[in-house]
Length: 202
Image (tube, rainbow, N blue to C red):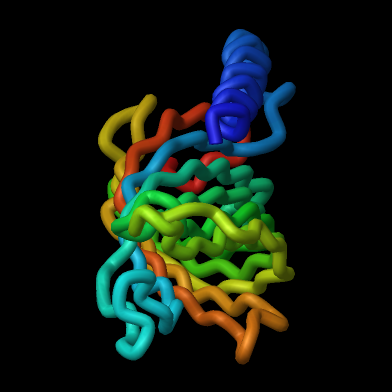
């Protein structure tokens, strides 16, 4: 977990440093509009096993965090990378996704940017069980292919910051036993905005 967070931080700093250098270039030298941000997320995990009551569905919401980067090459079209890490109440079970895909955005005035997207990627599920002392422990860590559809609303706070007011994502984890897994994730966040020559907010 610590290594994943360190990797994400390192990649974010690398991207930010290169984009910061690009800020000094004339507009004709920049070909995309970029934002990089983080989120707080909550989800219906669609996982039907409650670790402490195996006969009942798990009705608890899971909570976690995420990160995203949008690169918009045209006024209405771009690509997005996103990451989610959502954990159960025991702190051991989690759903983690790494996804990339296309997005469509439709700016409304200067402030509001509703968007929709479709993504593919990889999901990691950390399975848990009770040990002899009644504590949760990891028993398996398995990856699955994922697809997702979603959308939301960004708010242009100022030239440097965008607020992710609301984001909804419906995921499909293929071949998850005994059926596919269909988590639904809601997120809120903030992103640093790097202006490009193609700026849908202008």
